[in-house]
Image (cartoon, rainbow, N blue to C red; front, top):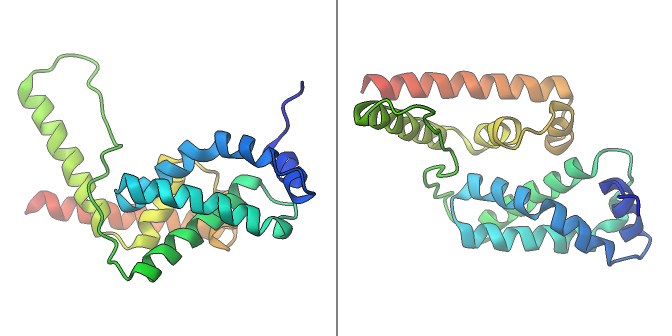
Length: 184
């Protein structure tokens, strides 16, 4: 059987074939979990938010037009679910370190080099936490989730060019914070 695209599956869900939502869930649950985990650092909340996204997809399936990519529509829904969750619980986005960032040393350079590398990763995590949620979000989408800028534009409700500018500015701010932490 020919594998259906995400857009084709979602159009089937929209027309009433709700079983196809399970296929979309299996394809995207890890990606969504990673997005939420990188945003909030809490695996339990991240799992709940993934479920919430698919509940919303089911509830708002009639709004899917099929013109843009399903991934962009899904991440826009995910973004809204994340904001709604924190607004509802009135929690400050208590971020923990981005433990998903791992750099593996290909050669054995010694304990000192490894410790230096860990310090840099820790410094990068601290710098990420100091970014605004909006800037952290665009970096996570573009650099960690490797989503195309055209889709990021759809997710954020802006043009592809504006998404690139936002990512560039976020990287510039991250670099400045990183260097500031380095001098402390």
